[in-house]
Image (cartoon, rainbow, N blue to C red):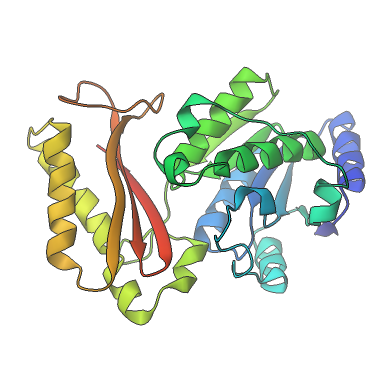
Length: 282
């Protein structure tokens, strides 16, 4: 396994590999890798000759007062995990390399970034699409793998790839969960013991909504209210719901009234100072 920390060297490697007839799969990450990331890498391994993992805590997707400085980092441990799952190259650029002096260009997807997480984190998705576009140009992948836990992010990246004619395929990978149902996330490390014990209630409440849906309840308001009531009843620690909403699974448009298409219920909630997201297809 090779570690590359300069954009030009990474691009030269990718270009040479492509000219040699080898396909490339990219797994973009911010590090502090967990089993969810490793599953992305395993899927990538099955689809391409070379697997490239990027590890970069992207400063421009963090807003004022967010957790950039305290975001968990463990590069040595991350490199060991990548090696064990058969990654070929780990790309570890610095902020100065990706955002040189006088950097002033951004990539923005407009409409679908205004809702859900985008409503409370202005500028977040512009930071995501800018860095992902740069990673695509640097690593020249045929495939890129993203987790479905970040459902809105996946939709935004797919929109960008279509709109800007990137010559690659975006592959979403189902959420990997802990044994108690909590969606794996690097931010789970922030949770106190009491918060960690309560956090799986998110998945349980979403599962309750899916069961009601399977029983014939197609009303968005009733399904969202059921999730809220379930959480209020079962969580005793410091907890606040940011949103519970139902969206069309194919195009990320909000659904209201009666559900007549494939739908996903999404939630964001705060446990103390930790913000968690989850979703479940109905």
